[in-house]
Amino acid sequence: MAEAKKARMVGFNHIALEVGDIEEALAWYGRIFEFSLRGKGKTQAFIDLGDQFIALQEGRKQPSDDGRHFGLVVDDKETARQALLAAGVELLPGQFLDFRDPWGNRVEIVGYDNIQFTKAPNVLRGMKLTRLKKNANALKELSDKGMAPD
Image (cartoon, rainbow, N blue to C red; front, side, top):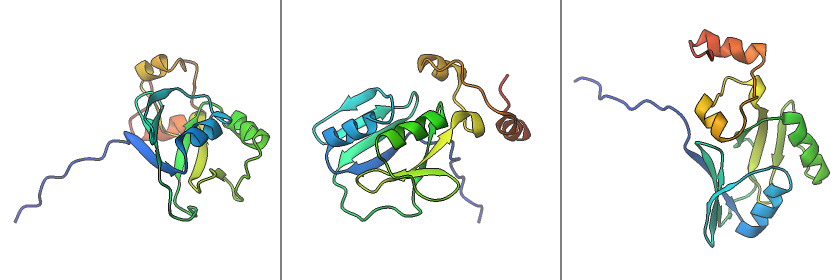
């Protein structure tokens, strides 16, 4: 019997985070990050990330995340670190810039310059982030996969 054809995973459309209260979550994340809303309802909000988004929804019931996390790519990792510290957010121990929000969602901050993740030029232009560059290691990772930017 032939193996069934499989769909290929190509990326993430969004990440959904459960929080206690939408207004509190927007205020909390707004102390640390500059962002625009894609949309908002009474129990949910959508933080725009260009061609992706973070969906916040009320209803967090489980305990804090430990190893489970997502990597949030930012334009400037050191600026994010300083904003986290200024907001009094406890940074988690380890080699990465990780923290938990007040509802226990674990987030790892990753600098755009240092990873192979990339946005298409038209998306960066729409986000007004046309000056973002990759460092040599990230460019090598992309090049090794045949994905180096033009």
